[in-house]
Amino acid sequence: TNTTNACTGSVIGTSAVSWSVRPRPSIAVAPTSTSLCEGTTTTYSINVTNAEYCVGAVVTDADWSLSYTDATLSTIGASPLVGSGNGVQGPYTTSAALAPGTYVFDPGTITNTVAGHGSCARVISGNTFTLTVNPTPSVTFSTDSIRQCEGTSGTTFDMVVSNAVLNAVGQNWTVSYTSEGGNALSGTPCVAGSTAGIITGGQTGTGNTTRPFTVPASLSPGVYLYILNSVTNTSSGCLTTPASASV
Image (cartoon, rainbow, N blue to C red; front, side):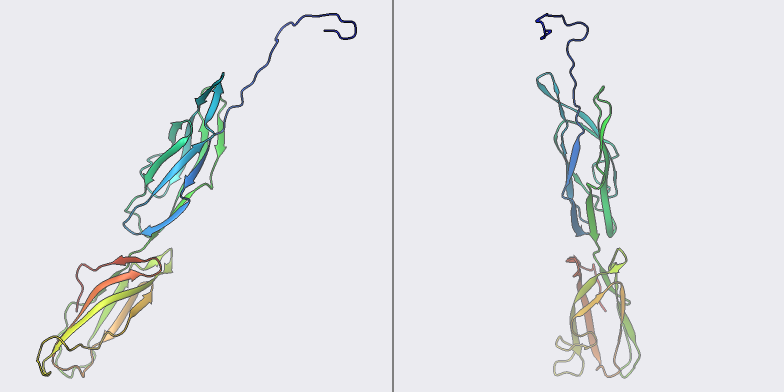
């Protein structure tokens, strides 16, 4: 309408314009980090959001594709992960075969793959899941038996702790052991009650360690035994029980 003189005109050509704003999906990974002992597993999930759009008055799921790298070797499989609409993907289980260290599930880009949506993509790197695999130390003796004559000096054996390092940092550990023995010269010869006194007190340390012990020349004739029960990574609480270790 010409409002100056009330002349009414007509609409010609295109009488309306409409446009659609297509979504760029997003994700959140949960949890963002966790720590566990070597040989065990955990899970993480991916929550996809903003993956819906309108077709007329109807809310419709948008197809999407998520690229990533997965150093945790989880059950998510090979990149990319594809899906449709909002929702939680997973849980995905990490590999139990991972050596001690730090591993990251790292998403790269999630893309709206609906035809005609113009490749609406969102870079989401940094929204990661970090897995720390703590070592379960091992402990053993360097020999399983020693025989020597009374009064002999200089006989040695080692207690060896290995796999006690995480990312080049030595982990604290403690060894549990049992001491037994029988002195041939005691009131009840060769029965339990006498110990060698070679390994004493709490056995603790840091990192991979070879700890020597010397059998004293003053040890009375008899049979003496040390049994390794367990070694615990006290930095993380990971425990190992030796299959068999004694001297």
